[in-house]
Image 1 (spheres, rainbow, N blue to C red):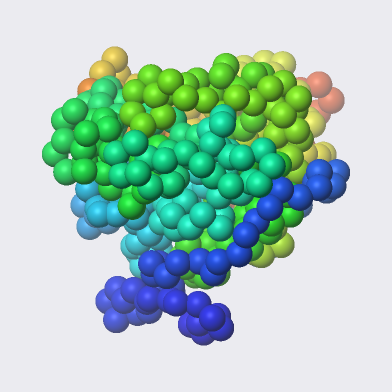
Image 2: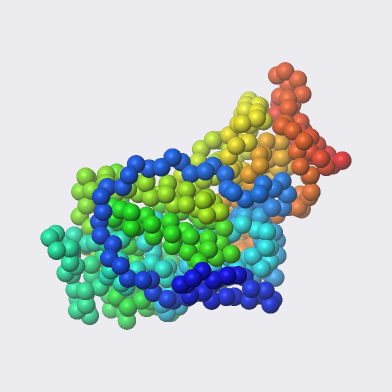
Length: 487
């Protein structure tokens, strides 16, 4: 793989094969972002489908959002997991591993997980977590910005820490006496690697065996969590009002970067989490009750929140568009089968339409040329039910889920699982296993390609068929039965 000019790029080898760029710790070049004019109006919505070649391969038309709290997934232990065609890894994946790094390298760990997945299944599309609302200090590329005051214009400061006239940062760290990110930039430590009692299975990522969690007395002022010198391990906030410089960094580096972004052969897309609202800041972003941000706020008034919301909306559209233009895709571009989008940080859990009118109406509308199901990137959900302690999971109506998917899907459609939690010893009191995601053999059958749209067998019959080159799918919405007959 060619290395882009001016970048530092390590390569990972698995089985003798080079899998593309892995992160380096090279600091970003220095420049001083300053608040610019109000951003222009948001561009039109990003492309509704990726630039990828469409596939009707059933195995590649599956999706999953796995999360292993204890470390990277071992595909020898869980070979079925590597078969999914589209995989999204959350920032919490391998948290027990990266939370104990010094300093933490969550985004680099995500790239290593993506490379491991690609080594097992080169055709899989692999997404990783991003957040353009919260600036997570355990991401190396975010930490490097927080350690470089030239970039502090990218972040929301604490009230009173940035001089109104000179723009200088004036708050000193009460332990070190330094003017650093910990002292000057707003951050909340509630859902962070050192916040004890986070997951139902225990602390939210204890660092180096520290059971006390975030506190100002530890060696890094975040207990034993290490997000780099001068940077407490908190959720800082991107200052969307910064203007084009922040937008350019989002689209160029956060999305398109050679080490962590789409410039890396192991990364195909992103899940962008969270969103701004127009509520007052202390309601939308509560003051952290403990840690280095305790009892401090950004002091944003309603007018500034409105500006922040508008600028965030512009940036969100910019990153979605940039992702598609650079050959990737975002979870937020997907459409649910009820026509709703995944939104920003939201997940689709819409089940297969129920018996009778719901089933009939869905298939009549979806099987029309140019319908939303045919013209969009769509996710379908495999129905499931957990046991009371989440130690087991059963599929509730897989045959119907699969039949409706085959009958109504378009060029860009995936059937599978959204976010079910971070298992392997953490959430649900540590009871949810690593291999909770069932993959029935029917997901690896070659059904061929459709020869046309599904059709209703007679006016008002409620029975639909769709012919494929190697199979025929029939659904009776009245009896709520389905049949997939191989040719």
